[in-house]
Length: 219
Image (cartoon, rainbow, N blue to C red; front, side):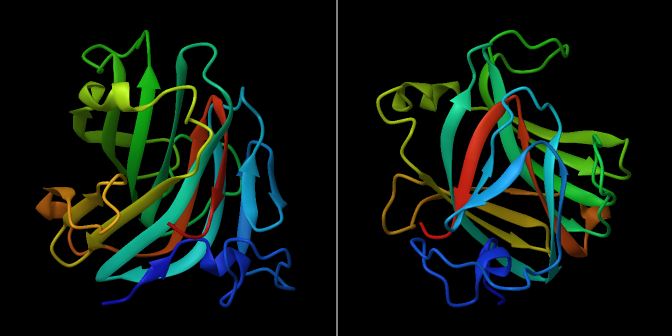
């Protein structure tokens, strides 16, 4: 099984979370929308108004993959809306603002106090989208996460949150691990549509919506 530290390719094969030096040259990437910058070893998206912020990273993907990184709140959400996610197994990258990201799967975490889309979960939720082009995405699944909202407070929202996602591109199984479990024994799982299997791609797209977030190595 291939193991992917999603930002390892961006930062350095031997980097630690606290490394200050970036490799020269950086692996292929595109800051396609939003305002992205490196500070030390962290990647920041600083535009709280950017609705389709996106950074594309070339990473070959096939079969089982593990995506590991941490995400930290920096600013935004004052309007009651914000989110972030990653397109995985992307077949291409578009260097501009776009709704979709070629042929890919988007794993999305969302907070919206007043959703405008009919049937969309109010509050805290997660979605899985099938992207078929830069302008077309279909909602595959949506999960109500409001039961976990009390765990998030303004006192600890600025702490990095570890993210660990295991995806088997051959079977469509997805495991999202419980970030509060230090042993990584607990996880939620679901299966992607069989028509999307097998998954293969060369790009990951990191996305934010109406929030400033930063991303780094390490759990």
